[in-house]
Amino acid sequence: MGRQPHPSPRAAAVGVLAAVWIVGWSGPPAYSLENTLSVARTEEVEEATRRFQSSLRSAVEAGEAARQKWPKVVWEGMSCYDPAPVSRTLEQMKSDIYVAASADPKLVALRAYLDTRLERFGRMPPMLIVTLPGAVPGQFKRVIGVRSDQADTSWHELRDFAQSFMGEARLAGDLTVTSDPVGAQVELRAVSGTVTKLAVTSDAQLHNLWRGVYRVSIDKAGYKPTAVDLDLVSQRVTALSCTLARAKSTEASRCVPETSK
Image (cartoon, rainbow, N blue to C red; front, side, top):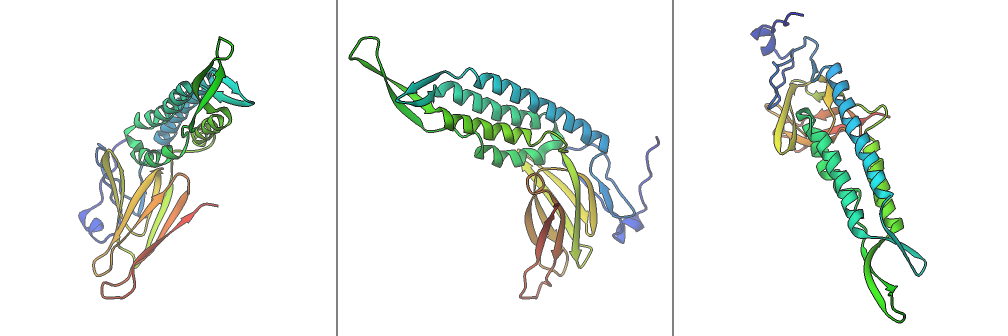
């Protein structure tokens, strides 16, 4: 299929077209007469989703196999695990999740999401000093353990977090950005090691926008700028509606995200 011609400079100047740039992306800017921007091709999204889910599936299987081997002791009716293998399993699982997202440079916004979320799951339980009978009657030994119910809960939370990306979940979705008045400059930034920027002019429809966490900035000459953080993973934001206040107004510009039901 031949390369589509670019629109004329005049058409771009009147603001009826949307343009995009992504740092590190080698493709040309995408344009549409309907102000609709396709950030990624559907086939590209499906392939990235398949690879990511496959890596997570392998990580969950390996983690579950390791969990089954956690050494257990029972002390005064309380079941405990050796903390060392518990810690290794949890940290390895977190690493596997992050590596799965890092394998694809297009998932920079998802990595920004994981930077904050992975700290909340799979936390190591507090360690206890357990006193056990020694080999010689009357003697005791002390070992360090973690409660098995707490360790199991940490693992299940981390496993469920990984599995939330499986099933019918896709790594991209659509986002509509509107502003009153129209014609505002909209910039989406994902920061995770390197900065990735995406820019459009409102009103705009972003098709197949990679899921993750973005900082969205809205600016228009003569009006107060505003910014908002968008979570396109857990909150499933589908639209962002912005109302801009004039520069001399006492009101503030604001943006309200809308989520899918």
